[in-house]
Image (cartoon, rainbow, N blue to C red; front, side, top):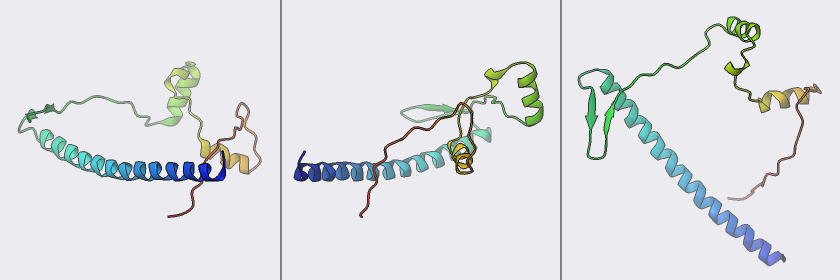
Length: 124
């Protein structure tokens, strides 16, 4: 690809990416508005004056579900260890924690490095 074509490719990418970022900002505003409306609606339904409320498009009711939370890490970890209950955990590597150890020259068994290509942009 010659320099002119490559320059056009960069311009096309930049234009598309700037449009994407503008839409993403708009989406963020809509998400914030939706969160505020949802919180207000949930608050009103929690007051209990009505059990459901509807509009032309939908009917909303407030439902409750239970979710687990660890309140005693030591007891929880002991249970996992004693009962070989590894399925209670999510296996997820913390990139920042690993990188901090690598900066201190600490090797972590079973963890390797791989390169990720990132495109850098300078300009307005």
